[in-house]
Length: 155
Length: 149
Image (cartoon, rainbow over all chains, first blue to last red):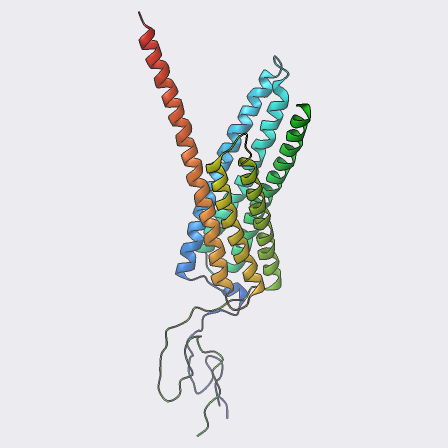
């Protein structure tokens, strides 16, 4: 007999079944309101931190430009300008990634039907930002240790 | 009496309806990340851990006797601990089953706390610089006034 036992929605004899939450289909998963609130909060903070990092980096790059321009008169300023430029590029790059991650997190909240792929995109950007920061920190530590070593040897 | 087999299309959190409907509190649907998504999460966990280690190294550098900066070292240690917690939560999403979304939310919450700490620290730093500038300008103005014949 058709419709014996449980059938899919709309099976003869049982009528329409209520739609179950689409937990098992990766592209159809929707974050709950509470999860969306958490994602929105982190997204907004990531955007704010991204803007602050970019502004700080621009300030440093501008300072480096000023040091280079005075470098014609005072050659000692050129390597300092180079160091400031190198330090200033990192916040600009990681800040851009933080801002992009924040925007991607915001799009997870505002769009529907694509939450998981958008979340993965946001996490990739967040990882890029963290990677840039971590590599810059490692380079800074190594360069600092090298110059510290030179300084102590010079003494 | 033969009971019908369980309904595969039933919403999670609701028992099969035998005779009469007995509702329970609906549970949030669980979601398991795919292997490709787990790679993204594992990558995030790895780099957050590396950043945490660099934060701890920064704290040690800030504590060297010549230029001791206890406040900065404390903040670096705190940020390092939070980053490690976030990394642990991201790793837990990959390693455990059945709690992927709550673990991800916990990780995001911790990353959000790190970002908030940095934002607050940056604002405090800007305010301190502005305060120093105002104090220096006020002091110079006072000197100019005092030195006027």
